[in-house]
Image (cartoon, rainbow, N blue to C red):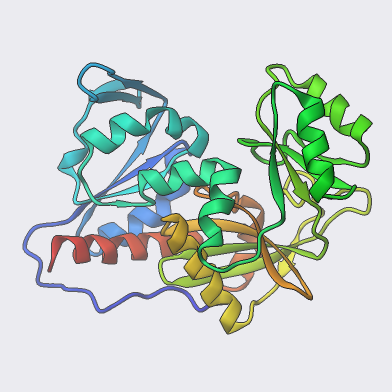
Length: 315
């Protein structure tokens, strides 16, 4: 477990406060310790809880609703933004955000869009040198062609998952062509599915913040379960990574383009295998364990954002 992030020495001679905006779908209360540590340094922290986003195809601007109000643009008022928004929803409005928002951002729009698509994540992460399971895109118009191609490269059991699946939903372990057909046929819209090599080992969640692994845990998998998501597992336990493995995780995060990310990996005799990346990792199930180690995750985020804001402003 990495020590709490402290960051570089802070400049206490700043005359004007930095203003940091936190874009999130979480309740404002979740970021209390984030706001507190920023405000204790004499700076301003705003939590913008997004309810609805309205993009304009005409001029590539956007408006968003929060706290019962509708705001058009305005994000340029901040020195730094922290993107803690749901990836697959954000991807619909990526064009508008990229064109309309020039404020420096932690968790860049493009990195979040990559993380929201499991195939893009694996393709992008491969450049970092990490192992990824053999993965194919299942033809969503002709099942027979797709499954035949997959069976030439993969053996059963296979993992079958929707490209934008979230929190373990629409992720299946299929043991035969019949199993895969049933899952494909049950899909409401015959969405894009991946077929993936089933990699066994320790299922880990690794949370990266900036240039370090903030913490890593092992998911305790139920005997009759293959998914490591919090809603399916039996809890988590501490699982420190080797220094070389920590650096590999940082490199993967940087390759995807994310400053704050939860990486789902499998660790076995072959090393670390990347399964997916989450720009808004589900860390709620880790909080008790982190508290026992004296770590406040959201305080660490606040310290990181404060230092990044000062760096971006050039003080």
